[in-house]
Amino acid sequence: MRGAAVPEILTARRAQADPPVSEYAEGLVRGVVEHWREINERIGRHAEGWSLERMPPVDRNILRIAVLELLWRPDVPPRVVIDEAVELAKNLSTDRSPMFVNGLLGSLVDAGAVPVTAEQTAAGQVPAAGEASAAGRPAPPGPDAGPGREA
Image (cartoon, rainbow, N blue to C red; front, side, top):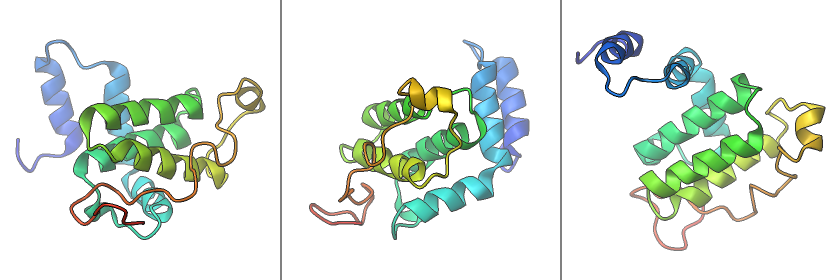
């Protein structure tokens, strides 16, 4: 399947998956592929001087899924998206990744780039300004990130 398009791979693997791939997971993959350029541009804009290539691949993909949910899945509250992305980073990436993921996604929310409803704000489903993206975010935990190095 090397060289095949992601949707083709997803369709082929979905038929063979055990347990089956959920429709939601498939929707996330298709959504990231569909909005690839804009998602990467948004991540790059909020990465404060760090390119996507310098981020660990796991972090890049956690961020891609989270940005998709923040911008194109208004049924998922921003606080939930950020919390889930941070948990994925804790379980799948480096020790510094959760703080980096939290800060980058928080800056996206703080910048007003994420559409939120009045109901989500009233229900506390949107982080307060600066809550998720504290000043002094660490550098992404990539090969060029050393102890104490700022982004």
